[in-house]
Image (cartoon, rainbow, N blue to C red; front, side, top):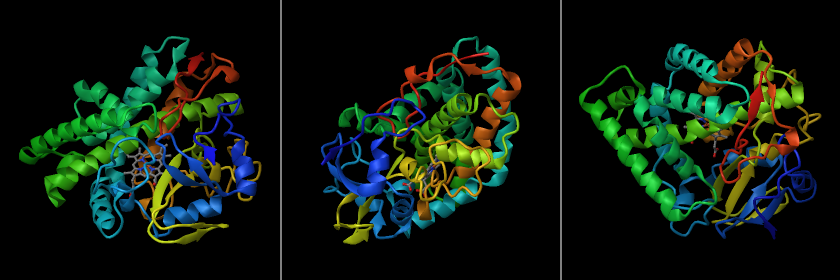
Length: 379
Ligand code: HEM
């Protein structure tokens, strides 16, 4: 049985080379995880879409006491990403009422201003992760949720611990989760008595505080690291594979960034509710199944020159945002944020380039997204 995670490739732009072999020869294979649990790893585009959208693969069953663990610590129960329909449908409908296009558009001017503010404070060589991508993602998430600036650093620390897949003890993950929920409980309580024009107040108009706390925590953990990684990985992709930032990022180029720049494994997990055939394998009821959307997005049977970044690629049926009922609820916000981040950098720092040879850039192990630890840039 293969040990997981796999050894990284020589370049951060490449997936571990074993994925090519797995897609060809063992598209659904058994792996042993750092938690000690065993899981099926799904690597092709067709199987990924099947597992992510078939109701026989459950999120809720991953929280049962006998479930094999994909990550350390207990998963929170009853939140968007650990429920199945019909409970999930109710929560998702509630979120859609508050996470509207109008709200996303209303966040744009502050995002642009904060991106410019961060760029002004950067001096070359600068670490793009700590000086731009991470603070911008944190500020955007906190603005969305109405979290005060003074609490943002603590928020970032909790969120990183909660999302870790290895290297943290179960105790640390559970403590961070408890503290995060307690903090958000306080935030929701404040809004209950004093509603405003923010997302939490909007949610509270349609639901009691309990599901609102769960939704806010969900948005925080799902929105922050993915965006920090998305911006970092996209800058790295553009500078390394394309030579420069794109001043006019059209939607083909944007979608290609989402397809290509999910470095690491981008794993999404489910648990089988009954025996189901996936490709050549019979997955048994109760088994843990992990989908590598990164591998699916480089499946050569769907994407020509799959390992190349082609900004004009169209059509681009990538699965970076998943598929089915759990399709990323923040996809539209993610597109907006990435476009703002990249266009402000291209506009303010048109001569941006990497300050480190590509071979010396290592990806961060242990997160569900794997951006480089640091990305030194100059201009
Ligand atoms: C680069 C950016 C992003 C990527 C690649 C991404 C990717 C994904 C994927 C693949 C899923 C589905 C997981 C599964 O099926 O197991 C998901 C779910 C989700 N994402 Fe995103 N995401 C991004 C940004 C965001 C942002 C900015 C937010 C909001 C602030 C967000 C909120 C969510 C939520 C709430 C879910 C759970 C949806 C559900 O279970 O119904 N995401 N995301």
